[in-house]
Length: 124
Image (cartoon, rainbow, N blue to C red; front, side, top):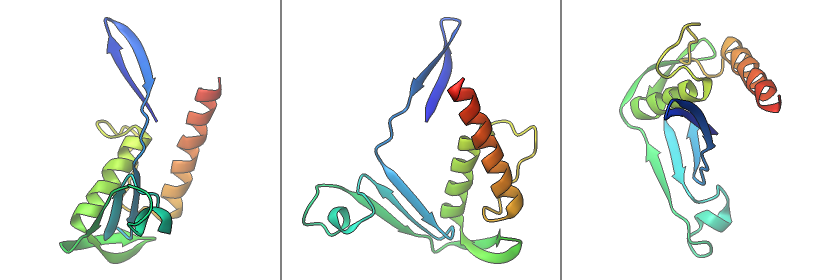
């Protein structure tokens, strides 16, 4: 992941090194921390890692693949904010990209398209 900003009138970029891992499941569960998602890190008697598990109990209506589902208010909002950040639409969304349904074909195809565009820009 890269960050960018204007410093003394010039565009600057820098790599953001993130060692933490995050997994959000069904917009109801989340695990976040330095622990790898395997027995070695999570059993507690090997690596010195830490992770936080969230079971979201405050549910609200959501949509997965066009079907209504219950999602966790916190986990769903966290995933949406992360997707918007990754897609560069956190503050402005001129193309009106909808991140509400993360498993729809429309969202998947748009996410891939933006990823491929970003890869091309980076490789140039």
